[in-house]
Figure 1: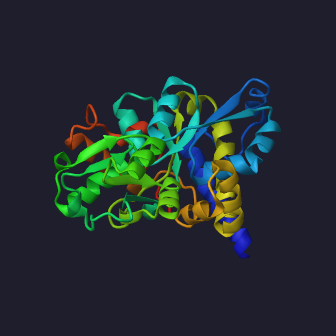
Figure 2: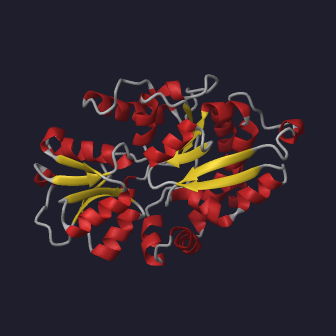
Figure 3: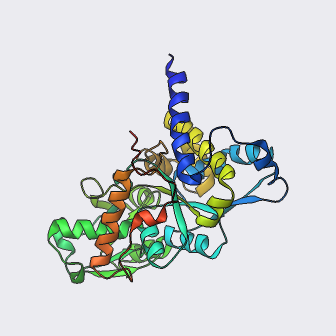
Length: 334
């Protein structure tokens, strides 16, 4: 068996599991009638951010071509961060999107009717706590009493919790300043905050453009999974469309892993950031969309429990409730 053939078989196996996760009822032999019903009537509205595989998928245009054959349209909406993207999912302005670890926790705790349909591998180096290049802060313990900018309910919110825990600093002993990335960068540049918890490509831009120094990234602290989520209603009504979306995500993952220079070119065009910035961010990506395994759900439950213990979410949640009922949680993937 050739490497390419093995890669295709691996992707096919993974997609079968992802499809089960997204649909619960689908098989590999999709009836043509199911897609025919959608022709000219249905679209998939995708929320994306300035990072990850969905940005590449949008830049390459392959999903539009494939769904056009079925008469299904694609609408893309950019969001500055995961929490607002999931707000869009909850109110029905998008059907599918990608976020980090923490946003689904906050959304589920707020009653959002969403489901996990897949995730990329852990990417802990893609987020960090940074300080200005001239800062006297040298260790995580130095954050005690300091102002730290972050997007509330985003993946870096959990990074900050774990970093403080490692340093023996109580969350109550820092001053969180909740700002979206653009406002946080402005505050960081003018010195009105002492540190900034941020993710790529904003992290890479701060390093390249501002000389920001990494105090700690996610390695050894958090997994930093990138999740794909859908509204439960859409996942139940249009599993065949989600299957195609996930198939194209897997193809872009395969391509992106092997074409770093072209990835940087596409990301630069899509984000408006310089190629050296996005190349640094892309070097920290993890490619390979997977079904949400037992281990990943357990990891998410630990995130949820951490936020619940600090009363940062209104109530405790059970993460597996955000899976479709037919999902086989016993399935684990490599």
